[in-house]
Image (cartoon, one colour):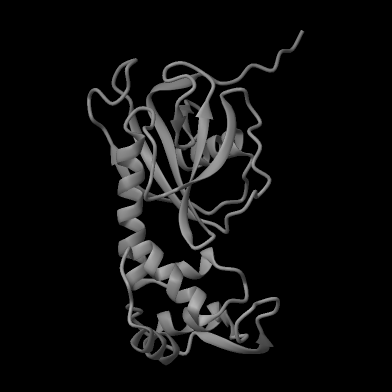
Length: 231
């Protein structure tokens, strides 16, 4: 009689995912409530051991889906953590992955009992996390800060249509600093990466602002010619 037996987990390697979102003017990180030992009932990044039969990228995709319900999320490796005592069950090296998605519920629902639930948490007010996950999350934040200065990755966190004020607030929230409004708008519009729409905000108490869209095709064309984005 055939049985559906899962491949063995690898005892030496794991993956951890730092997933960023932006909601209500605040940078968020996706966390889970662990439902297994070690660190049962602790908050943690979505992470787990890798199977012997899968490459590390596939492991990250699987783990993120199992613990949060999210799929088709493009992730990049950004750092490897290998401290000898980072895992109480022995030495486990973890490969950390980084992704930027639009927040909201996103259909968050763990599909295994390993996690009780998945939820968004303010990135700059993290609670105590399992393992060395706080260190991993902070390294992820540092990576995001560095990338957003030289790549227009911030647009992935905004609605498809946004105002210049929303864009500026996003940069200020991630970089934790005030940005001069006039200089920011002059620089961002000077890159010619935004398409001004014939639409304005609706449902606001103040004067409705113009809406824009990020022209990704234009950015890809400029990159081929050596274009440098810098905020």
